[in-house]
Image (tube, rainbow, N blue to C red; front, side, top):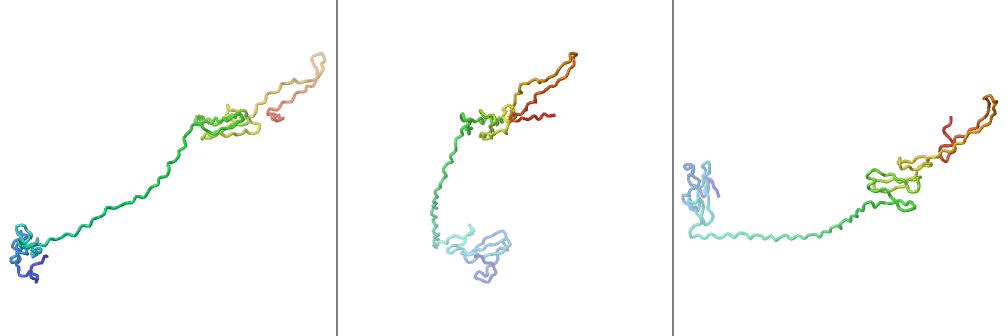
Length: 217
């Protein structure tokens, strides 16, 4: 306990030794060995009480047990023992692994042409941009591929047929009929002149299935 000198208490009457010894900090109490004097940086003096059963020793600047006095042992409070934490791990359920379908190249849907299944839409053909093919046995149809290799059968418009060389439907080609000479009648005069009439064959139609000729005058 620190008590400043000059206070009205049991410590009254001790002169301030700090004012004449500014470089020292601790001093013996003039009359009580269980106390000592302590100075601060502004030369104020404090009277300090040693703990019970101890006296001040200036050589060690502190209090020590007094000879012949038994200082009661201080029993520290028991240290609480912390039990180790116990954790219960919740069971974990993992989802079953995903089933990955094996990749089988060129196993693509086919077209039933009547004579067997046929699919020209291979991955190689699609990669090269070849997506149109002739339909076997029927030139009024053709096959179109999508980018997954599926084959679709499409029909050409009426009177058109598929031409693989131009990848398009076109009009059927019609052979030219056999030309028939024109016929006529007349008479001569024997002098290199004469007169007569001529009947010409009509020009045939150029489109199959139609009996017309758009090339009129």
